[in-house]
Amino acid sequence: MNTKRVLALVLALMMTLTLFGCGEKPAEDGTDDAPKTVTITDMIGRQVEIVPGSYQRVEDIDNTTLEERPKMFDGVARPYVMVYGDTFAALPSCGVGGPNAQAAEAEKILSCTPDIIVSEYEDTDKAEALQQQVGVPVITLRTGVDGVFSEDFSGSITLLGQVFGKETRASELLAFVSAETADIQARTAGIAEDSKPAVYICGLGNWGTTNHLMTIESYSTFTVANIKNTVSGLSAKGVQPIEAEKFTALGPDMDIMLIDAAAVKNIKPLYAEDNGLFDSCKAWQEGKVYLQMAYNAYYTNYEIALANAWFSAKCVYPEQFTDIDMTEKLNEITGAFLGKGIAEEIYRMPNSFGGYQQIDTATFFA
Image 1 (cartoon, rainbow, N blue to C red):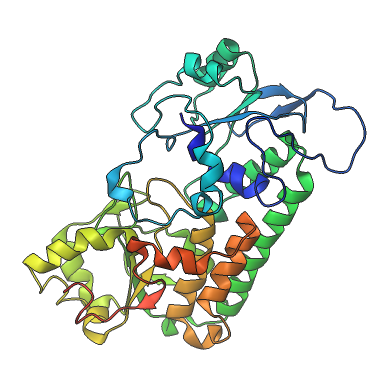
Image 2 (tube, rainbow, N blue to C red; image 1 turned 90 degrees about the vertical axis):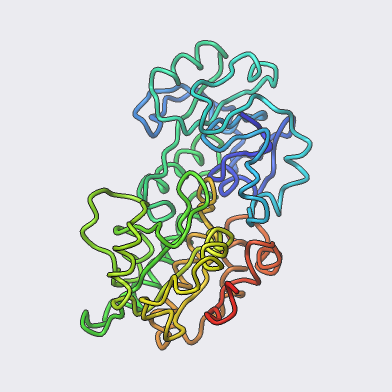
């Protein structure tokens, strides 16, 4: 567990208005009343006593807190690090973390003297045990498979607002996400089903970077944007690989292909070995292949996920989104989440390949 990798939800809520870490006191939401102890229910149903707005030293533990980030993600844009990296660099390590850390390192956490711990390990017994060991509240969040569009995301942001005395900030952020979602839905709601092109999404991160075979049937972005998914009938939920034979069989039905940028470095050597890799794919043959920014490289970057929804909708239904410039939209979204528009900085990252784009299928993987 490493405070250099503060949970993205905490960042989304806290950083825009008042940055605080070890030793900086957060501002309260316009009240002079002395803080009082209240009992809240966290996202896994635990009852926890807290003093809203009183916390100065926050420790995050989750599946992504790593002392050393895997090399596979070098070059992938992490917006919160771009904006607040200097702050993270000054914070102490509180343990190893990562997906292989099955238990929080209580001794190392204690050495950081936190006032509160925010966790995404959805284990009631472990949360209770850690709270007893460390002697400070442990609050568990949950975001759900639909990420920024899920009720769990909304619930977690609301909970953080209550814990840190930032109810107004939480409401503002959720209102922004809700308005963006509603705008996308409204633009695409009236499109007839038989007029919708079939779209294949691939390269989505799943415990690492992936390739063209990694896809998902119930993709929340497609649901929000009323996009028809080429893939159906998968045996499991969530991001998963399909067989190469199934990809080939689906190829003629792929009117549009969206590739997640994190997968490019894995697809490129496969294409070098077999440049007929996408021969069956209608979208590839017709040049209707688009690159979205990596949003789930080891864990979800919520602002990128929201921007990708706009990009997907714009690619599939260009007439409904002629007024949307993706650089402007990404700046608006990162500004709302992180307090700064950083689209150009994101595009300059090596594994962003210049940003949102329609790729040249003749040269992109050559």
